Length: 235
Length: 404
Ligand SMILES: Nc1ncnc2c1ncn2[C@@H]1O[C@H](COP(=O)(O)OP(=O)(O)OP(=O)(O)O)[C@@H](O)[C@H]1O
Ligand SMILES: [Mg+2]
Image (tube, rainbow over all chains, first blue to last red; front, side, top):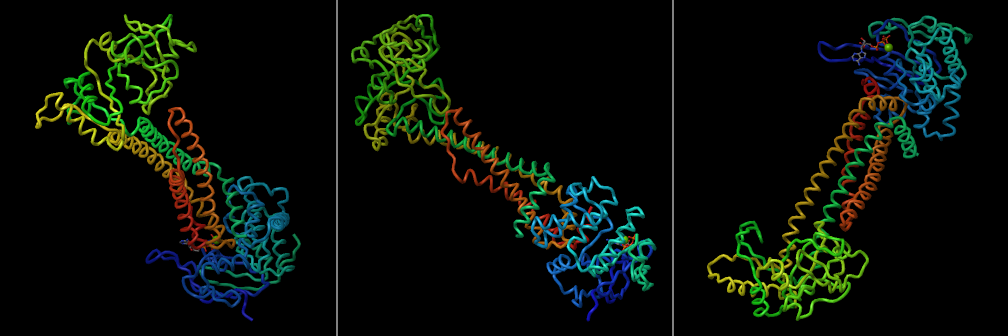
């Protein structure tokens, strides 16, 4: 059976000519369903670029990305949108919540596009917010929430659809360490109980320790791929 | 489902950006209201003028002194005026006339008891009533004898009656104008104000002979009104009258005439050209306000683009297709345009109603007048709301998200 996610010689080049930067310089990678993978590496090494490609938000300059064996480059824009809608949940490095919009409405949004009815949508959005410890903050807009709380709203939004894959770019970057461990416990729980595949970028070894596999990036290439016994769900 | 969701998203969006939504709506509102009100006003004025002219009848003609090319009828003071003999000659020699009313008019102050009123004193023949379609509300018109001898009698216009007598019946009373006393024998029924806002009922009618003897002291008249028995004959009558007038004024066949004979068709087209200039002027002003409103909408929409680009990026990233996003933005633009349009139509119709009733004009509004400005504003709103959104919806989600 084809791996869930597979990158084959994926290159991403920004800019042209002299100014061209190879954010990814030929990546080969396979991630199986149910894995919990951490991407590590210095700033600018291509982690976010890789995650964006895995999340179908960006397209490689060269190479092939296969999702469940399907070459993503053959899909048109609408099919890519449907793939994101039905299989992927994305947590951005910069949250990317809708401004002036309540936490609840932000979390509901992916369900809107899945055609979930209003009542069911609110129920699930409330549950997702509760899961990230934001009960009672449903009516707050991003401007009324701290950075860590916004980060958790963004995570709730990625989880609310019960996606096959969650792609998280530094989900604990703005949270204190106690919160960070709680969030990791949540991700580990999702990974173990619901079999959700998780790919997470992190700078902290503490957080990477929750993953079963750590990929190390350097200058657009993968320089390390280690499997490890993940740390337990205890926070 | 998709549409309903888009409507929901639109409502949220409008609630989130009340200022932007209000300004867009306002831009459309003002444009639509201005155009409707302005054009309704222009059309009302034109319609009123035509109504008035039609009220005078198709069979009316008039003779005025003046030379072509010198600013039109009655322009030059040096022109030889008309007199009673001209009217008599026309009445005698032209066939098919229902009436001849030479007319002369002077300003004066009429006094009755303690009341006085500045008005105009109009002298004319007995045909004045039939030719200019005046009806009596009270009393009687002048007798043949009164007309012939120039008796000191008068018929009051409605306004003069009201100002001098209030509710009292004036028939039989004596009023004074300057040093002359007149016995009131009748009162005209009101005609109201004319297209140009002039009170047509503010005058006193006296026999022409009386007017000439006691007020002006000359045989000159300002103009001669004629009424054709058959409106279709007015062309022939016009030619006949011109011939009579040339003889009266001893013009050689090569001389340019120093008088005009006009029938109502010509008068209507003259006045019509004036009102159409007025209407196009108002329409131009309205069009400017529409364009200004449109530019306002355009600005608001374009300013919102950078913020919207990010929003679109977010929506695309979490699974919206380009068309889902576009449906939402299109519905938003249409909803705002419709809101502004309906409010603008309401306001425009209200303004038209108030303005035309204040000015005593008929209200002439049709679907084109209402829908054209609405369509224009809506198109501006939709185009400038929709195209930037479409551009954004075609980007890679990550590029849309990176936009600042
Ligand atoms: N839109 C872009 N245009 C040009 N260069 C870019 C763009 N995005 C990323 N890069 C470059 O690509 C390289 C990899 O960027 P990327 O964001 O993947 O790094 P990262 O590993 O996520 O870093 P960090 O840990 O700081 O988030 C960097 O050198 C960056 O400057
Ligand atoms: Mg990054």
